[in-house]
Image: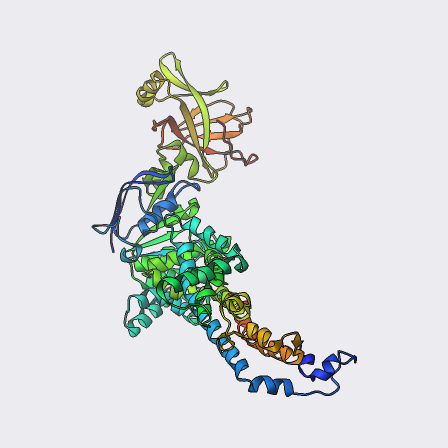
Length: 356
Length: 255
């Protein structure tokens, strides 16, 4: 049981920056998911926590110990790899007990621990088989078993489900969550699959180009993305990004999406937006796809209806009904100004539009 | 070879059907196996080959492991160097080696020429580069995650080598062993150049030097000697082939 802390971690491979200054605090027993597109540095970060890569600069703490110069075997961590990395010449039992045998645990305890882990993972009857006699899902379970028996301070998962077929992936996802609820060890989990991130994580860390864009609960990163990248990355179908202009319209401000659609800015938000305007900042209205079918498809203009505001965008390759989320308003985000909108799309045009 | 080994000298030189043995005889075998020199050749060859195999495998497995997995300064260059060393033919090396040995004799008085055990020092110069090169390839094909998993499980480099790499790369190690044995068993040139006395010769050289007297070829005995000499590698092939074919990496990772 331990917390993990990263302090301004930088990693460069032959002058190519992979991770550019990461600060992250992971609480004890927390399930953290690092998510981002490939090449964003999430795996490198994980490998630095594991000790398989050396951080170019910065500090890594596991528990309260600075582990920068501690070799992997003394960090008391366990890792599950994308391609399982089972020892092919050993049986499942030998695979799972390898770490314990190296540490010279008494035989009885090894047996007890392996049996215990096998029960959790439901692989008791596979203990005498070799990896090549196992299916992908079973291999992944063995790989997790190998991690569990060590009873480490931290579990590290490096895209453990990417090699499984879609159905098994969903099943294993649930199981990983269940296992974490049983063993409650601090877990760092790397994936590029946002569904995994959203379903498994206590907190999601969204990385982009070697930096952390946002850390927050799945709910937070979905509903209140801090950057345009997060907004576009999380959620399926992705959020629409519409370019628009801020126009001064008599007394108040109006957000002009295109020639035929303009949305008045509520006075409460006017201040933020006029500051933005003075700085000639881009203003973007982002709309979150919303799984509700719209009935009022015929509306051609933006109009107010109670707390919700709807408008239909029509033409310009942009078909959709915009529906302002109840309770949410035009909101200034940083670094670019944009509002958070939700969209309920016309039943007949299922395409997720993205126009920039 | 087998047919000729069963013929008497008279029948070998007779103008009859060469594919048929009219008067099969085991006299060639009896002559050869009762000759003390032939048995000495056999013993010399066996000891030389076994020692060379042991030395080579010890050196090349360790060397290949470090070249394949530990990235240190110049490791890539060194790996290429190992390969280039293999490309130098032994016919090019034996004269300088001979000179070196003569020089050592002049300076220190240690006589290195005309001893069968000198081959134990000489033959690894041929086998080590090649075996190291094969093993580098084999070790490189072992997924990196496997040693990372071992590292995290708490293995040091030596444990990683003995508990993971050697068992997993066993087919490669066996292939290298077979090659190494064949080379040292069949090596002719170094034996011919560095040993001269009848009791210091190895099998291939011994057969040629003792069974060809002047221009008289004892064909029956030569063939018998060669056949018996070819037997050990054959037996070893047969035993190790099963392991050699069985790929052991299956199941380590996806695929």
